[in-house]
Length: 545
Image (cartoon, rainbow, N blue to C red; front, top):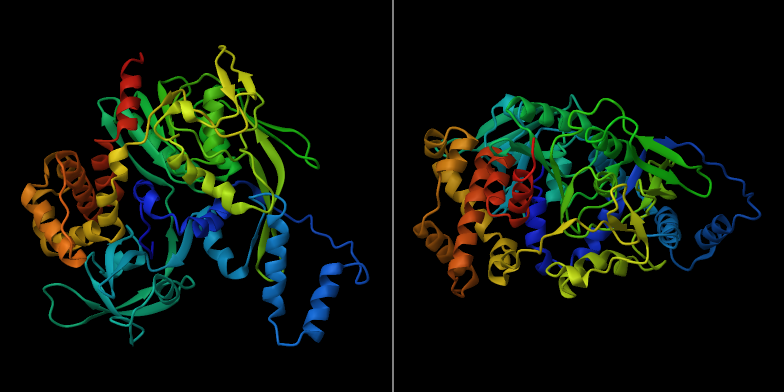
């Protein structure tokens, strides 16, 4: 991917520690956590004349008369962004330098060399190559150190992730020369790699959890999501799946059409999935077709406070039609629909033009105060302080907005989707001592160096992800060694109880698995101790096929 993105599970692990950066994350989340119409608006006209266009008049006046020189384009962009923030939390201005990366999230691809990397000890290390991508074809391998790019030194120079992106990404067909240091090879290896289109996958992982129970995790709704999901579903059906767990935790949303198409697979022909309506946009209904691949089989959908917009459309359609059980915690609460308008300078705005409503007629948009983005996005974090993640009674759902499903179940609007079965957050996950090891990168770096030194023997002993998951184990000696190395860095020792010790073993094995086999070696390890998934399995085991 030309980056090393932390998993959404890890993001949840680090929530208590990441308070300071949450506001910065919210700005990016504002771009993503939106139901976005897949078409682009061309409804852009300027009815203002030079005489009555106050913004242009003021900017011209500043440019011509201000005491110091100013960047008028930057000033204009700031003014537009502030204007949109006064409307609602999800109307956004996207400056040109951000637009490309944000579009990549929705289109599901970018152009580059196809590696996932991390910067360790001021050196770019290849975590893994994208299957069948340019780097894999050229011969790059996990564990390689990139020390030069186009004969320019990049090792030991405090290079940043953003600088690496700029050096490695580029237009399809262009070439980049890399200098590589590889373990067991004395001399520098040089590779000339031709950039190509690299897919960004939105289905993190799929596999059989147990017997005939399948599992699919979707991390966003992009243009390629439906195809990926259908491939995953068909593969699991061929393996004998008869029941499914769909995991939408920490999925911030994306394209409306993708959400509708995913929900369509679970609902019978003609069933209402969602409808949208706005001041200038008449009511538009989206209904299921006869194309569904899993319309009647037992299903559980998992959500949490990070599940927003498109995720909530899927969960809302499932819940309101009494189709399946929703397990987890209250979703984010985002019921606004944006339309994208591209501007001449390669920037764009995403303007809220409608609300969406679940089949019973509820809008699940949580309350917000105009001009105050911080409180709106911090509300998700506040749930950890007010106890909502561990006690259902403290839920802030608006019980005055009451709706009834066809089978008589009560559901609520005005603050996200409340699950049918509440699962409290595993408080051991938020253990400060473990969080600190993750934030400091101790567990990840120990895993990386361990795999780097033992990759060949590990792959020989565990030639595929299934054998690794079922047979590989972490012993106490490894944990002690890892903690010793971490505590040498911290210069402070910590003691761990049995529960914490077990959690460390799970995390270390998962990170080793990820380095060897990607998400297929990571999520199955984490999920074995995930209480929400265990509850989903319990629910499905009671269901008849």
